[in-house]
Length: 200
Image (cartoon, rainbow, N blue to C red; front, side, top):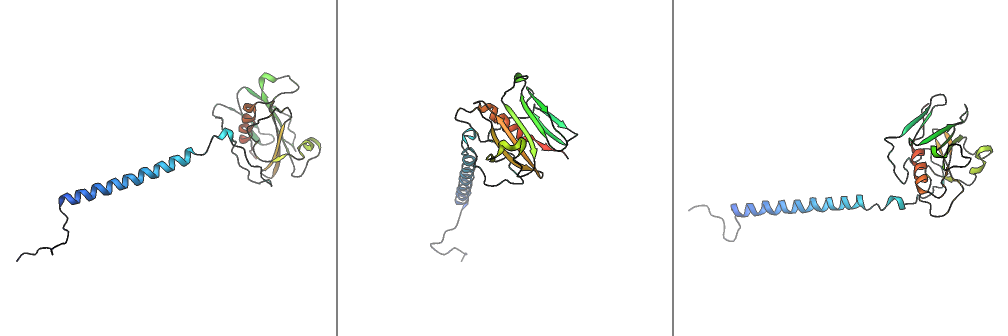
């Protein structure tokens, strides 16, 4: 008598093996597709960055974030380097750098060249000082926002500068963005400021 499986037991044949393989492949494809959908949805569900408003921090971080809200490509920008006082900053080619730095203090003004010669102009000022120093040129920074970036966007008419301060490499950085109601200038101020660094 031949060995035969007991009655009522299932013996897979070639057709059922093929069905199991197809079913496994379909389930795997469904799992992969679902995972990709959720990953892609999470990446695209960050909202419109131009509408984001950074939350001010209560204290100044010694390693501030270097990410402006609006991101502008700096690939074609010029790099201004001051080897004497050890810093550099990138800026758009149509902007100029006015450097009044002294050994103990960086003093930079950056603005669109079309405002050259004007007394008042939209642009960015960067000055260094010591933490807690709000006297002299930093006197205007009392009550300024402790942040590495200027809050974007501006929604109201604004003629006065937006002022922030933060610590970088043990030095206090005071920055003013004079915007005159243009979010484009504010975005440029943030992107320029994000490139500022000490080289020594």
